[in-house]
Length: 181
Image (cartoon, rainbow, N blue to C red):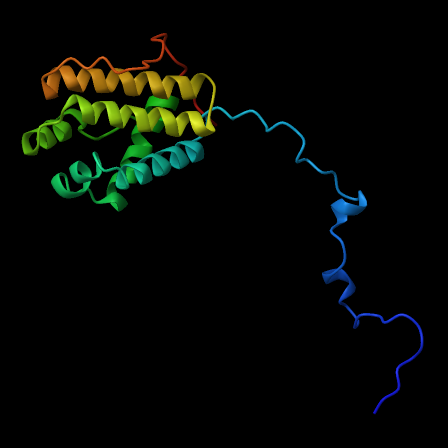
């Protein structure tokens, strides 16, 4: 049996860095928990549009009212659809290259398969604005909400056959279109 040296026990070599109190307890690192949260960023880059679109359509997939329309009726291929939607919203918000898709034709076809009703429009707009409001604030975020409202109202009137007022409609002033570069 090996005899131990007298005095305090020391951890094996290299273990000091893995244990002990966190640096913030000793005042070595500032504690930001008491600080107010940073204000939300504006929806001003293609990466943020990507995050918005993927977050929004993740909500759609788990929504009891909208998922059957997207999943069972339209049989949306998300791997193909999401990049198109990102391109569409970048075009709307930043005036990037023109969107090559056929928004009206696509939704007219969908409405022919299953009637789109005001409740669908309400829920879509509610989820869209909630996803924006949870993470972004500013002129581009406001423009994304205004455009979504205008788009939904136009499709409801011209394609779905009803007037859609859209509760909580944002102001209708024109929003910025800028190049994020």
